[in-house]
Length: 376
Image (tube, rainbow, N blue to C red):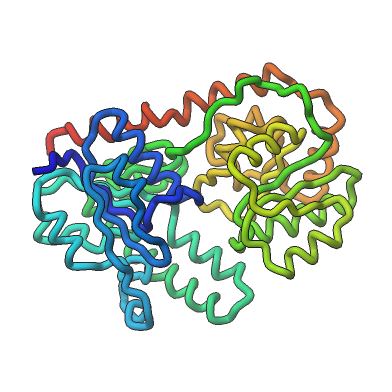
């Protein structure tokens, strides 16, 4: 019989680890295996297939189809939760007494179920979901999406109360921890798990006089960020490299119309890492404060000068290593200043060391291991 130290219920198949949410799950699984925990993974799939790679980091892996369609949307339960409801999941979770970690509010349909009475449970709260969907509603130009996101936001706001049924909430940022401490008596900070490593040299020899923005360009907030930067660089004499998958024709046209901007498409991990290290400035605007963004963590490890707005800066401890800008005028001024000034190697080195210390996967895995060992 398989030894089980922990069940993890994931909202998606966490491999390939090619976007923020699944990066946290996959690299968590790797780190937990490294510290000796035997994990059974349960994941819902919709558009992703079963992955042999997950067997290398998990004792067992189970897959469940999402219940998509109009009936799931008509439920009083948020769609992201009601569509992740499968009786086989409850059966598998009931086969032993190991602790359960629910990844995101999405996977908490069975949280508090009588069959799981007496079990140690935790929820990895990914961000303030109700606020996230409210922001999506405001951003969307589609009336259907605007309505759907708005209704989902209201459902999530009410459903948030169910988090009190968990023993512990593991938060992605200290700001979210502050928020959830008002809803739960045990909200803990558990840093995001990630694949990033320190640069070998704090400052590489060949630095280009260019800026970079990267992200999934099928995501509304990233599209808005690129459009904002295009407006900024139209008035500057510096080049902007844009990397990421999913850019559609409207955005590509806007990029093409900006003489300073160039779209590079989706890059390999190694090519993106090299481009970030070779670019003098990394620009990270975001229109909404919806939790930690992996592009910010990656920039802390790999970038030279970082210009961002307050909504992107999740941890104030890193403010001294970044240049803050809010208005278009402030962005232009900070970018021009970053290009004109010499890079401070010692400052970059200090930031990278702090990032490596603050976001250490092994240390974070030990937090979970110690929780599993705590008396219920």
